Image 1 (cartoon, rainbow, N blue to C red):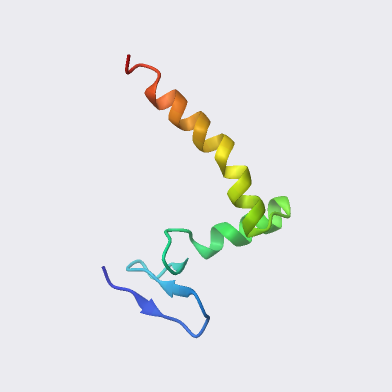
Image 2 (cartoon, helix red, strand yellow):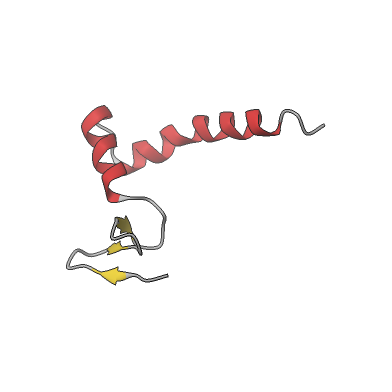
Length: 65
């Protein structure tokens, strides 16, 4: 995996030249779009993602019984 540092602290470019938050798979554009569309801060985004994640996990495992 090729990673390129940028002049911005905690932002790197992944192998597809996409700006991501260092140590995560979160794309900077996702944060920008969430802020623009919903007014979410990074903390709001984290909180808002939990119900969707739980819902996704529940639906993906409903047939495994």
